[in-house]
Amino acid sequence: MYFAVGGRKVQSGLYRVRYVGDEATAEVDAHDAKEKAARATRQKLEQLHEGSHEDAIEHAWPHLDDGDRIIRYAARTAIEHRPREEWMKKALQETVNTMTTQMLKLKKSKGSSDDDSSDAEDFEKQIAAQARKHYFYEERAAKVDVCIRNDGDMDIENLGVELGCPSLKGFDIADRIHSSPFDKRSDAELKKLGYPEVKNRHGAIIVQTTVDSLAAGETSALFRTPLRLAVGPDALGRKIAMQYVLRDTNGKSIGEGRLKLRLGQKPNGGTADGATHYQSLDDE
Image (cartoon, rainbow, N blue to C red; front, side):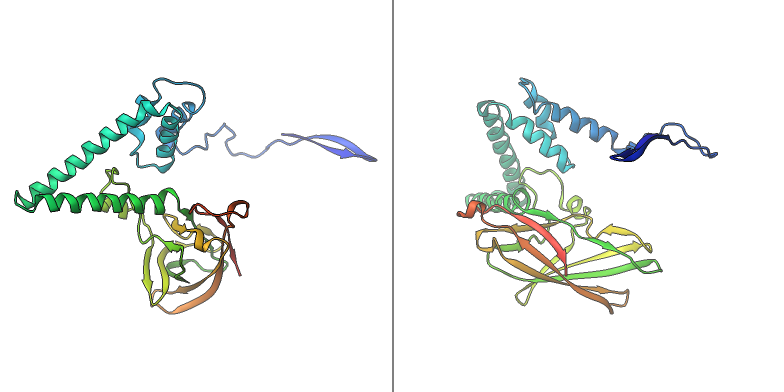
C-alpha cells in the first residue's frame, strides 16, 4: 500500500507499507459463501432494471414470492419497468387462480352446504383485509431496528428488553409480519423470522424481545426482524417518546431509558398521502 503526505509549505513524501509477519497473505474472498446464489439472483434481476428486456417478466416473475425481501423487490422493479399491459393480465390471472384454490380448500374443509355463498363472501373479506394490512404494514411501513451495546466487562445472556410508547391516532406498530395473500410461506415460517412480540395494553404499545447473548464491548441489532412502523397523516410531524426497560433472567429491571421517535414532516408542507416518513431514532 502506498500513500503520500505533504502540502503547502510542508515537506512531501511517498511511503510504502508492506506486511512482514508470518501470517498468510493470499488474497481472501470476504463474501458470504452461503449467500452466493442469492447475490447472483439479485444481480441478474437488477440488470433488468436498465434498458429494454422483453424477457424480463419471464425471468423475474418466479422471484416475486422469494423468501428474500431484497430479491422480491428487485423482481418487482424489473417487472414494473415493462409496459403495464404485458404483466397486468398475468397478475390478474394469478390472483384469480390463488383465490380459486383457497376457496376450494375452504369448501373441502367445510363440505358442501347452503352456506357456501356466505363462506365465499367471508373469504373475500378475509383476503381484502389481509391485502390491506400487508400494504400498510409491509409495503408502506418504515422498517426500524435498534442497536444495543454491552459497555460492561461481563458477557450478557438472556437479556429481556421491553419498549413502550403511547397509542396515537395515525401511528401503529405491526403485531406481526403481515404477509401478502399470495405469499406461499406458512405462519410457522413467518414466525421463525423472529419478529418481536407486540401488544396493545392500557393505551400503550408494548414491544418485547430477548437478546440471547451479548459479549462485553459488542454491539448487536436488538431485533432479528425490524419493527414495522405505520405512520399516517395524523401522526406526521409528531415526536414519540419510547420508554425501554432491560431485565435479567429473573425479570428484574437492570436498566431503563428513553428513545425518541421523530416522525417526518408532510412533504412540501402540503397534505400527506399516508406514506411513512421516518427520520431518526435518538437515545436521550
